[in-house]
Length: 455
Image 1 (cartoon, helix red, strand yellow):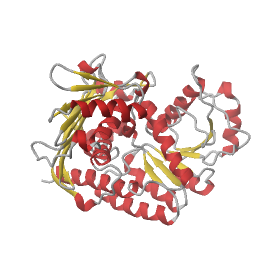
Image 2 (cartoon, helix red, strand yellow):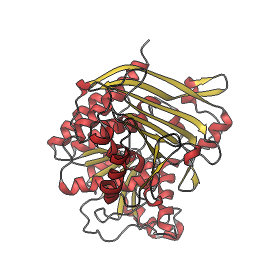
Image 3 (cartoon, one colour):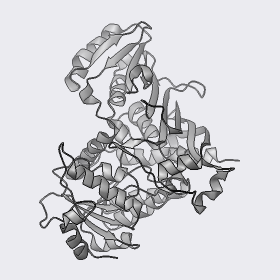
Image 4 (cartoon, one colour):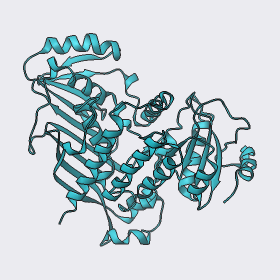
């Protein structure tokens, strides 16, 4: 492995470096320093789209050589070089096969950021917390029941060593979900969440994603292993992490949950087919790699990226569904649908053509409590989210209008969740419900996979 000093010299010659970054000669007084381990997913770079007073401007990167590392470095370079509010990150890079051991032995930072191969992630996490390092990790933390058992031990170790282990739940900062949660907590307006049934759940979360997309204005190139469910995880344990988290966060706000409250009723997983041309466009590879041949049927790659689960949480029926298509039709993108059914009102998030593919919250009143809704919007919610208004529609529903300033987009949510995590670190405390509810969340997703794979 190359050492820091040799690489620092290379990075000082900024014009000769494709990432155009330098090592800082002095360390700031910021209390936290990021060590980025094996950044194999573009989310690893997105947290650095902004800078934070609490974070040192130097990022210590430990990773194997390869295109994923190059993509990560170039992504950060693009943030440093942009004209509008450029960042000023410095990189100290250690490349080589023993990247984990090197990070643990040198430990130049106190926070490990990890986003990449999900099958290895729990082992990275365990090593970090065992050595007194905070963990800020992209979802999912685990992708199967074996990993979940390790996660239980990792949280126990983190507590013993007084460090935090936190996953990046960006969707809690999407304004439509925030407002759905706010309205559901108003008993006069919403009543109580229905119990629901398998056929008609009390709360539903569905999302549609696409393999080919643009990130930070550039076509996203995904690593080939992204399509191997033994590495990335089945779809039912990946994106569903966000949806299960939202169900817990909205239906049981600030409450400590327990795994005994989860009853997995039904689950299934199915494939999205990609031909070689599509695979080439997404990955840049000219052929299917040997390790993916197990998933090839005929001439197409069958990716088990789709999943659905139906379960109860503390007696409330919930449905979660995620679908991956190859590419969104022109002018569209990833979409989200959600329904919370209350005894007095239904709260619905739609993100279709009528909404210009922007998540939008609708309210369907069941008891005609228009005045209650108007008063809540114009007083309490106006104070928190200035500029929101209410539009009554011909079909009897009400649409919550939110100013553009609140529609910051998925990429900006990474800065928001990072700021939240730094707040927890500074206080040396998370809300009492965060850790137990993370365990409930991953218990739910891994149980869903078990259920879906039952013969």
